Length: 245
Image (cartoon, rainbow, N blue to C red):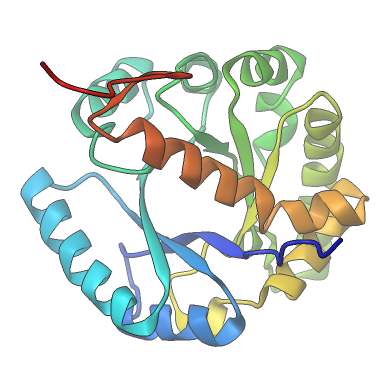
């Protein structure tokens, strides 16, 4: 029996802050062997979001590269998070929340409109505790680690970041929280091939299959499920509108 070829995904390439042109980032993703790239935006007016997404889709279609769009939220208050989710959920295939405090982390973990949560390495030991993990398992959330969050000039800081992630993430994955490992890049030179990303993920989860899944099966499943949810015919899992009267 021939196993289907893995399709690799970089779920976090930023189009905000100091970033390279989308065309250059897309070309690099194609060159590195990715089947799909998710470009992330920060909260901007919806009209501008749609303009950017339309332009980038055309570029990726010409390259033969599948593209998705995600919104990165970094709220400091739970009320701010809820407001942003009401405004943007139907526009993006992926909603990701960077959790900086316990109140936002708990709300993000409970809210099924959130797909992915991620943490600074200094925050992950205190925020990704047993209560947080249990909420994420119940809601079906994914946890993400970005390669750039592990890159430090000082070796001791890099070792500490890796240790913090390994202790917290390994425990979460064992309880059933799926891991996504992304580049977190905004520059073409920061992007890495799937094999390189999965090699670093292996240092965190300690399991080769789980590491490879974190750059292929897990992010691809998230995109496929959410694309189905965004269709006008979708009602709820297992239920869709077949014919309109």
